[in-house]
Length: 359
Image 1 (cartoon, rainbow, N blue to C red):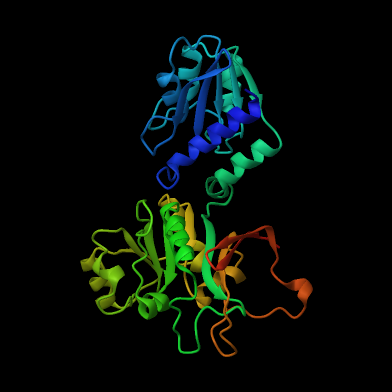
Image 2: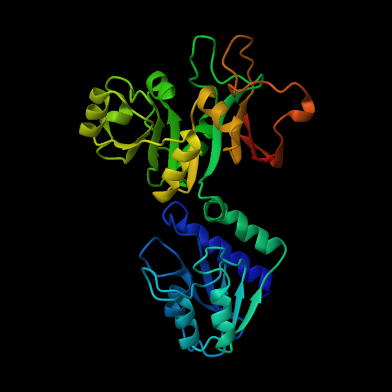
């Protein structure tokens, strides 16, 4: 089998940990001997064995002289688990093929250096496979580089760019298939975020229901701390981790939230600081399902990395809420641009996914 095929299989294997590994990266590993895969492993979560160790322990037969394929550079430091490099060296692996160097300061080339120092041949891939591995761990890489989480803004929007009717009704702009896709997005993310207005107006549960998967942490951005009387989020806060992000000054509101089991995070530097606090909690991949006000604020401040827009075949008309409540640019040349654009059918809708180009 070719390097490309083997590493692609390791990348696909790493995906099994999606949604469970934060704040750790997704990692997959394969042990190959005599041209055959004899061991497989992926990282399942913090405190659990790393992918390389699992692959080595699962290997059938001797690993002496074998090749290890791993999607991310093996660690060479003692953390919650022992260094992966020590396990690799001890099992007689002759060659290690790595898709992506780990930029975490505690790793950042030290794993490669340790392996080479022990006589292990190390190949660091370039090109498409390295790009795929980087895309897979985009949230982790952004956190390491900036201290911020990756933010994906998701919305259902009409063909004329409206997210609700003039009276505020938004159920349902998107198709059944699109709503199932949203639940899959929630299951794959660390946290789902909305604003207080959306919490009061739509009273969403923000849980995973239409697909298999675990519920993400729920984050409500609100300085008032008002989630609505008897809201579903408030009622279920004891069962699903829920955070209110905002400087809640009202003591009664604070007490009410605390009694319900809601955590309070009070950033003093606006949304930017709030997102950093969430990232420090290990919430590295955020799905924003907020309304135009929150979406507009995030866009203006350069805090949206990706969009996932379900465009429905309907026209709502003038006067209804726009997708982003952000000031319009004065010239088309100044517009926010989208890169890596993909369109695909989602029932009767079209799903647009893209990255937001940074200025």
